[in-house]
Image (cartoon, rainbow, N blue to C red; front, side):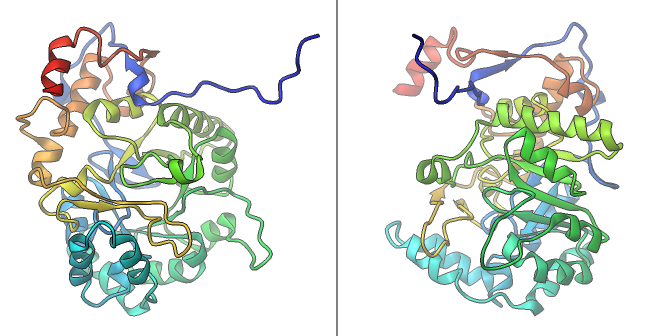
Length: 381
């Protein structure tokens, strides 16, 4: 008799396992339109800066937004806990590796100061930049109204795994439906990786969804908890939910692939998988203007009981302008990300992101190694 199966495993794919199929028609890269929207707010480039203390402070938020991207300021971080966050960031950066986790647990245990929320948001707004702010579900009921009143343009509610329904004995869970009705500004939530969770979240009225659990360079959730879905599959599934929801309601929810992107090809594959925008974290810490000064650390590391992040050294590679727009003087895909996106769209015949999402992907685990014998030899020397 056949043995019954307890579980049927599905195959899931990450960036290194797929390739983009070029089109039958090509277009000039400079004719491509790479804008994306959160409700009625338009951004010139589909790049979101992660809501992490090493990535975004008010100064960096202003610079990135003027370059066309969407920065997100962390309202659970050092910017709103300390009057002089620069000194605290330097403590984290200069701490010995063996002591940094305990230090961060101490630093992030300090209370959030309501007055600093308004100060940080108003600094960004006075510079004429769009201000998006992030908070965890546990602080959202308090912080979201304060942020909106201070002038924030977008609210982001983010935790490792986000669902529309939450069971707890200690408190009434955050209702995204209530939050979306309460606020006049767009609401983005995350993170999710499945079709069903994405669709249920969209039906609460959100405007954007962050996709990705554990793929970030400084995140160890997959190692600690074993939870996650590779980003290509996760993005495809959540994009399918977006399209179903759009057919149901006529409302478009932006899909934002969050984490796992290292080089230009990863970013391009995220868009072909269905993303409307992508999140850069460790990539942006390599900009000279970033507050982390060449270091990066995970959002979950300050956990008092189960840290799920680590501090990593990314190094400073150049200016934000060079990272995003070039010119690039390296061949490893770590500079001129906007140029890479436009060129990939060009060879696929995609005039905009929506057309790029329809381009064919193939399973190709040898895409980076096929014919690369001499490159592999040089890299190993």
